[in-house]
Length: 208
Image (cartoon, rainbow, N blue to C red):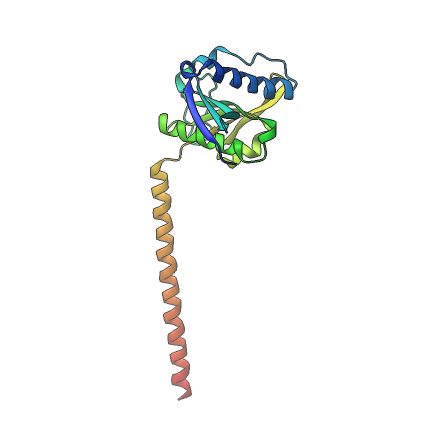
């Protein structure tokens, strides 16, 4: 399914935009999940709101919390095995797709757009999410790594996940290592070919 995306600050949202966003969030997170919790929070004012539209109608949504306003931190023990300490990072949350538009790849498109925006806006920052546990495989397919144990949030099982940004140096090193392996393989193949030819030549010599 092809969607159109727009991303706005809270102040850029019109009253109609805000109505449809809050209606969708209440429909998915409160009504469908039978979870009575305070969806509208003070964080919304500082977020970027990404909306997926089809024929100008909202079909999906997520919000991006800038690093300076994000309280969901990670110890980065999984994302950075070297043992770096926690640092400010952007978060993606309130990810939803309306029921009639699910199973069409919309959620993946929304997350891909949000990740691209975070990488462009907050370069070299790990992205953190508080994922509902039943969506673990979906977020892993996007590159997120589970961190820590499952926990309850508003009565629903969640797990913290991080998406580390692969450094260019690592990519180059992997490419170099791959090239070195290719050269060694070619050399061994050539050596085996020469030995094979020498063996055949020896047999011909003995037969004459």
